Image (cartoon, rainbow over all chains, first blue to last red; front, side, top):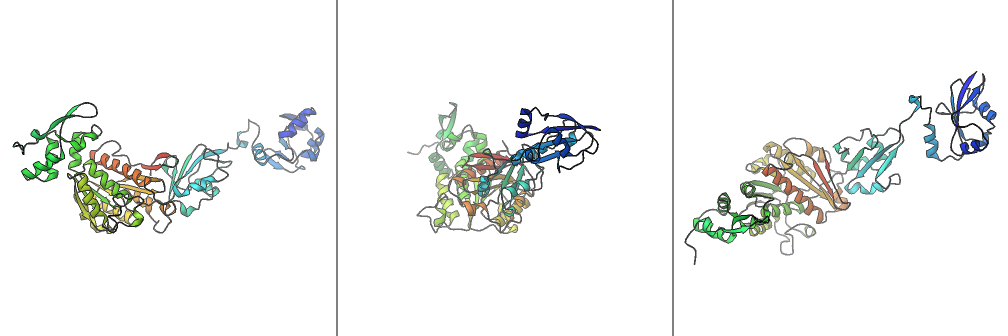
Amino acid sequence: MGNVLFNAFSFLQKKLKAQDIPCVNAVLDLKDGQRVKDILDGLGITPQDIEGVFVNGKIAPLDTPLHDGDRIAALPPGTPGPYRLLLGLVSSPDKKSDKKKDPIKIEIRLFASLAPYANHGDMDSDGCLSFKAPATIRDAIQRLGVPEQEIKLVFLNGVGASLDSSLKDRDRVGIFPPIGGG
Amino acid sequence: MMPKDHSLESRARIEKDCQGKSCRVICDQDLLALADILNIPLHQMYLQSMEKGILPLRYLRNMPSITLKEQIILQTSQVAVVGAGGLGGRIIEGLSRLGVGTLHIFDPDLFDETNLNRQIFADQNTLGTPKVEVMQECCRLINPAVRITAHRIAVKDQNQDALFADVQVIVDALDTPGDRLTLAAIAGKCRLPLVHGTVAGFGGRVMVIHPLDGRMEMLYGGQEDACSAEHQLGTPVLSPALIASFQMMAVLNLLLGKNQATDNRMIYADMEKPSLDLFEL
């Protein structure tokens, strides 16, 4: 016997709220041997209502056995990809270890003949590029399709750096090709 | 009638500088005449005049951004400009107007039609003529107080360091990576600062390279056959004109020991955006 914490996200939350089904940080009784599916059944949620379930922050099958203190989160079908990823990051605030980092947004400037690579669709209108996981300058330039052999100088926040330098939020990156005209 | 008094003072007159301050000035014509009468080399005549507090009129509009004291330092300075193309030509012209007393200029090439888009002194009359000789002649007319030594040679050998024995600053106005590396090695050997400049498209870079600091290698090491930006973007006149000016500023700072004389940062200017950034390398 014990409890589990249940959350529903996105439009599933709206739908369940409309039916007065507890779905925001709801503490539910857990009987021995119960699985994810049993809890959802108990709430009147059918498999058609959901696309994925997270147990303790990780996507899990419906027949996953549950334990006291587990956290369950359900997502409806059709949740847009980025939200799905972001929602996966949500966890109880008292468990820091489960909390993943905020997205990293960096400013990247491509100089001289490299400027056209900044027209990549992943670039914001303000010349920024976002990462949801730890990244290096090499990851950034690979994402923009800049061939490494066209790069001569790399700067991180105005100081010479290497392609292996790790990025943090609000970093400024400058990339130069060889320049030799006179 | 030639005035009998052959002193500088007798030929000086009072003019107001742009701040309204009175100063004694003297015309080129008088300085040329006195040098001739007194049999003194022209550059010495200019120096003597300034040391007496009499400013050659040609420098009046430099005041007070360049003071009389600083004009004297410039008159006694020697600078080498290696490469007399888009950057070098403008630097040679500019340093002549600024009154840098002695210029040593190096370039093996003749003007050709592909130079007409950007290189000062490249025109219908000078096509096929050695660049350094054209510049020596044109700059003599611009400022007779400046002595120009024209070397119609390439600086391609580290053992050419004797050519730079008397200079205080070397300017890199070359256009090939290998030659720039050689020049940096020579500057290192001579313990001289090297003012590097380069352009591509509507932008370019300036950086002061100090003896053996290894930074020219960072810019060009291992890059001999890489495709350089200027081959993709060309070099229209705007960028050499801009970057040459930044290089001249660096020369002034080094000679006069002011402003960012000790600032090694790389300046990158892009006129298209436009933007100007400083980078530490």
